Amino acid sequence: MNILVNAEPRDITSVTLAEALTELGFHSPAIATAINGQFVARDARPTTPLAEGDRLEVLAPMQGG
Image (cartoon, rainbow, N blue to C red; front, side, top):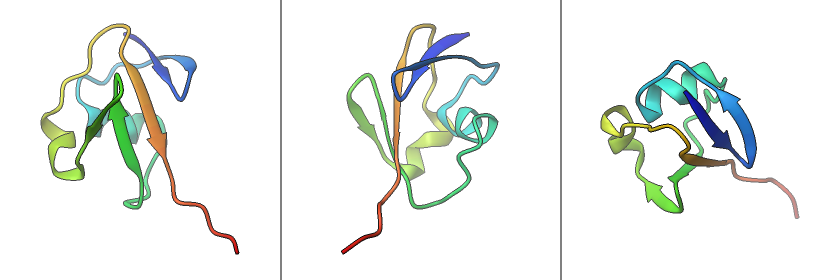
């Protein structure tokens, strides 16, 4: 299915958010996720379905001073 990941079109085979994160190479536990502008908690990722055209945002904390 085709979704947008951080505003970039991607074609994935995953059907849940947790599967998609693994497929897309996001392995860090320290990320925040949102689908179509709605925050998705880490515990909800395995049961959160994805649909054609969804907008997935993955944010990682930044270090700096």
